[in-house]
Image (cartoon, rainbow, N blue to C red; front, side):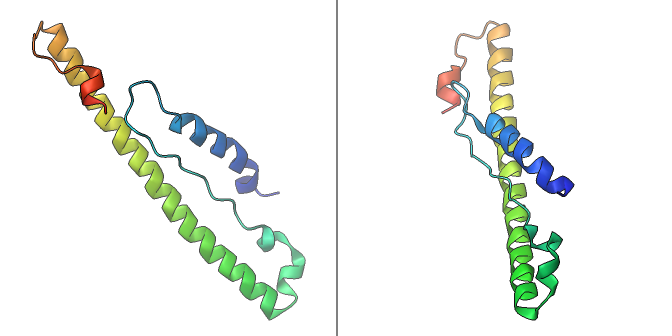
Length: 109
């Protein structure tokens, strides 16, 4: 079992926990970590060209899924940073006694 396959379940769980929407938080995206094709580790994969070709296609699909996953995680980071900025601005405004501060429910939707 490769390290990537052993880490797939914990990474997926962490992704689910990170993607769980917090009360009042921005809408967050659920990112699913791709599962590496196991065909690379199976000796029979290399016995004939057809099986090798299918495994090669699986690897190409996996590479595309990794790119999609990375983009999804980047989007989550952007959303969290935007939420952070809104919360910091709200805090600063209220800490300075501002009467016209935006409410969290107004700015986080």
